[in-house]
Amino acid sequence: MAARSSGKLMRVVASDAADFEEAWSEICDRRVGSDVDVEKDVAKIIAEVRAGGDEALRGFVKKFDGARLDTLEVGRDEWDEACEQVDSADRAAIGKAAMRVREFHRKRIPSSWEMREEGGGYMGQRVRPLARVGLYVPGGKAVCPSSVVMNAIPASVVEVPEILMVTPPGKDGTIRPEVLMAARVAGVHRVFKMGGAHAVAALAYGTETVPRVDKITGPGSIWVATAKKQVFGQVGIDSEAGPTEVAIVADRSATPAWIAADLISQAEHDELAQAVLITHVKGLVGRVQEQISRQIAKLDRADIARKSLQSRGAIVQTRNLEESMRRADEYAAEHLVLAVEDPEKVSKTVQNAGAIFLGHYTPVAVGDYLAGPNHVLPTGGTARFFSPLSVEDFLKRTSFMKFEPPKLRELGADLVRLANVEGLTGHGASVELRLQKIRRARREREAAREIEL
Image (cartoon, rainbow, N blue to C red; front, side, top):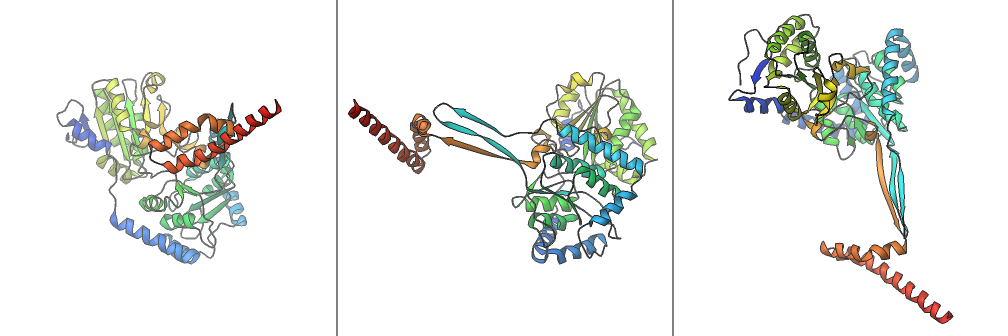
């Protein structure tokens, strides 16, 4: 892999270098190694919550969050008081974000449908909301009202009867007012003060206070991600989310300072976040590096961003825009920024991306907060086969079918043949017995008509 230039945070790899494919493969492999100890510890936490219920939950909240709680659920008065503390301008901004996200998700809600065929065939699909869902919202030092909005509103739009939210409390046992305000405007019904693997376990299996849910969505730490993976099957999950990531494809029309800011905006999330610039413009590389050094010095989360860019970031220098787009598709980014002259045209070639940000005036932050599309996106290259969180994630589909005797008579022989091809003669017999009755009834009707004649 190409060496990092002196004083530069991000390594640079060129597609015409002899070792490029090896370096590119490393960049595309965003997997974070499984921690055996975390797997074991999470399994133990889950088992303790299943056995100990609320008492075990309060113990884990005290251990991991430093909060002593008499009750796990946020009371109505506490919720009301928290909402009143939110600055009016902040309240308006949260409300605007919720309104825009709700409007976007209302555009296309799957509906039930049915069809009827000649001869008595009747079939279709019924679409119903899940009965109860649990939303995980990171907490502690973080303030994440946007995560509340993005997770809760799709569930609210399809009228899930019970939307529960869990989030870690501060050491004083409270939840940030902005988070509770977002929960209210987004349609959350109940809020519980807990986070980590123990919160996931409570949602998956239920306790005396926390009802068991049908599905858990929302991002979290490696402990949360591991817990979601371990309870999957007992409960649905949205995905196994990994660290956030961005790929930026840039041409000569891009502004170096803006590109640097977009890379930093993802890197400041997490030391494991990955920010990648893909460009065929050689002169852009150095200018972006210089801007990163300037901007990161003023950043509140400079240490986190610096470590992310140094250990996980990369600038990929390609031969032309076509190659840049091909590499972007291979990378399959959670966030794909097209900082190019004709982004709409270029975006039509994209096959793999969680969300696409078109043009120079659409930073990832637009999608993070209030554009409308969901910011819960597939990570780690899973955009090849996963989609953003949407109303579909809070719905279940049930198919139904009905055959009247004429329809079964029409298709029965083929049914029996297909069953026999698979060696499942019992399947064929279940059809043949009915066909025999249909044939007898037909013969009896024909005999009755002959007598009448």
